[in-house]
Image 1 (spheres, protein in one colour):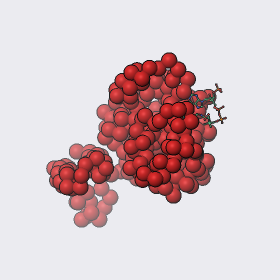
Image 2 (cartoon, rainbow, N blue to C red):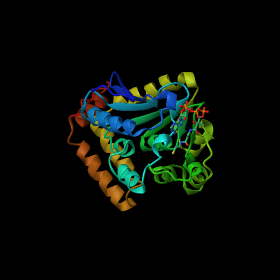
Image 3 (cartoon, helix red, strand yellow):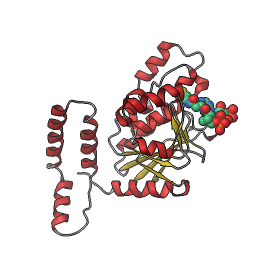
Image 4 (tube, rainbow, N blue to C red):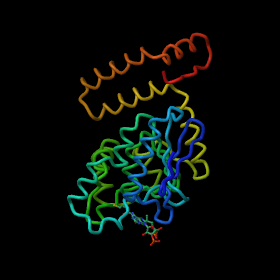
Length: 260
Ligand code: COA
């Protein structure tokens, strides 16, 4: 992997970790973070030894405190629009073929919350505070917040979070279905890795097909989604992993999936 300035990459077995590494700026998403993050995702996508990705923020205070507000000055509507139409970290995560877990270790605001929303699973520390405070700056979310948050928590709650700009704590986020689990800060990493390692043992092809099918639920109508699910289910019957999974069950042993 190339050396990056604003992110750290680490591999722990078959789980890769991207850490946004600007703790003095509460890991705010600068344009460099976007560029480096997209490049890192492209590398990790190709690396067969990586089965699951965890994204987190450096330090104990913040996951990601949003877009880097200092870069807003001087931006025209056109540069902002074209920047967000290009490959952002949000859509690179969304289209990443392997499972992505956001390990939310503190402030998860604005673009940080949008980045977490682009991940497949969100796990938060009890100390995390989440929100979409863009409205306080006279703007609205532009990295998917209005769409992904609404799909996850419903229109009423999404309206309240985005229109008030207020932060909510991790427990409330859990009650809304915005995060999957909440753990004490000291347990966050071990619990996140326990889930990541469990998922990493599954067939990478089946994981990819499952992700694609689940994402269709909010992106297509039911008939289309059900038809595509059958196609993706059928594709799994062409893999060695399917043979291995079935054989292991019948032989009463643990399967070893190779991603073939
Ligand atoms: N963009 C750029 N810099 C940011 C930032 C952001 N989104 N969020 C925090 N920072 C910087 C601060 O400017 C400060 O830098 P400095 O030490 O050079 O002055 C540093 O990170 C620490 O932040 P600070 O505000 O001093 O910490 P705090 O504990 O008092 O407050 C927050 C924490 C998260 C409540 C506060 O930083 C905040 O409101 N951040 C902006 C959140 C936001 O609106 N995000 C959406 C952007 S669209």
